[in-house]
Length: 133
Image (cartoon, rainbow, N blue to C red; front, top):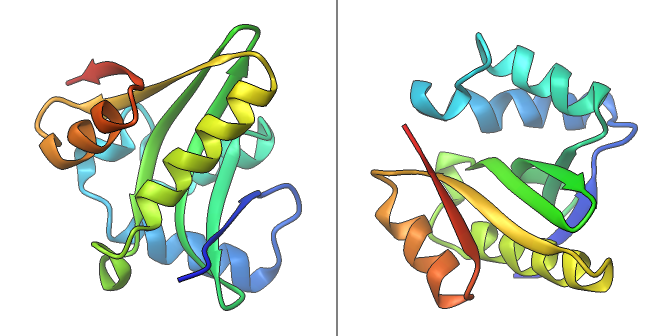
């Protein structure tokens, strides 16, 4: 499945609808500290930190990627429920890692303590993990 990693700088109306669907499937704890999915998306677009995973011109996943000098932090990674377990999150992690390495930065991933599967993916990729809530 060719999943493309992109920065969501100028999302189309369809992209915005897809983002709403992605985060509509998100558990409430994933949205913290944002009030809701709309606030998370708005913050990501305003701060230019929203990244997405696209397949067949539709967005399947999204995350926030905070690019600080030397350390990048990937958080709020969510994949639509319909397309989970198909490598979308893994692709986002791989591409974020590649881009951070190119920028001579370390990628760390912010993951909830109870998200064992995502922690295992990050550990297998030797990524630094910041556990939340």
